[in-house]
Amino acid sequence: MAEHLAAVNADAADALLVAGRWTLADRTAGHQLISLAAEKGCKLIVGGVLNSGCLVDPRAAHACFDYRPITADERQVLCELDEIAQRHGTTLIAAALQFPGRDARISTTLLGATSPAQLAANLDGLAADISDHFWQAVQLKALYA
Image (cartoon, rainbow, N blue to C red):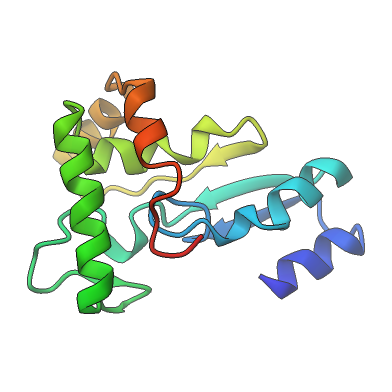
């Protein structure tokens, strides 16, 4: 994150890619970067919104965060996020896909798909109706904030 902040402070970028740091699970870009970029007119592009797949299925034996196996503590928080999503009639994936775009200071959310079916599922997730009650319930719940 320090490199991003340095680039924005130096007016060295019109746009920056922030991968995996403004997501439902990891909100560390929210500390300084998002506000500073907005103040300086630097557009932020968010990628890696599923955090190496742990927001797809945190219960999976092979679940990863930052390309490494998740810890027991991370799994617990991710499963809590999933349970909150289920209680509010949505899915963890839909919430993860929509999270970055809820902040008007984010200009673009990059999504990847390895198949037409995955692309269709992503589009469905983006279109899902998620209640404000869900967003309030997870406001302070993240692995890294």
